[in-house]
Length: 215
Ligand code: 5GP
Ligand code: MG
Image (cartoon, rainbow, N blue to C red; front, side, top):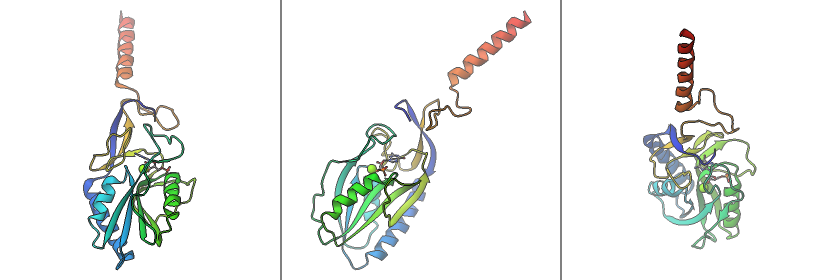
């Protein structure tokens, strides 16, 4: 998708659906870490709201740490390798660490984060993602907890996920569309995706042609 005007398309998961799934995820996580202290590492900024909502559902001792990563910059196509701009603030050595990210796409970002955390020698290391794209990954990353799966060709926004830093605050998850002309990933215009302007120009031409024929 280019950098043209965008609009919110189909809603994939509503606020209620997200909340219900978070309840389930929290139960799964609690079961695995029962009687242990968990260190959650939030990969920012995408997992900001997901992590906040998830940790507040956990009824086990939890420490929260952050790590900032940027990989898409202002577009919807990866801008190259992820940039880890902040390092772990606390010591995770000997701790049970759960890395929480927004979405697993090619796997490159999470693989980079895991490598960094692993160097700190945690007692155990697991991952939790809000979303996982259904695709063949460049790097195979183990994911122990996953919220929802989404189609690989869809670029999604909301509930922490952005497009050029926008839409993070939406309480639901939706597909991002290009305003007016909906352009598919391969660059071809989708059938029936004419702009309103072209449509009206065409019908004006048709009308004037038929009226000139009548004359
Ligand atoms: P990966 O390194 O796995 O290819 O990409 C993961 C990162 O790319 C995510 O943490 C997220 O920041 C970004 N990303 C991948 N797919 C999407 C998407 O559909 N929407 C948004 N907003 N970000 C995405
Ligand atoms: Mg991210």
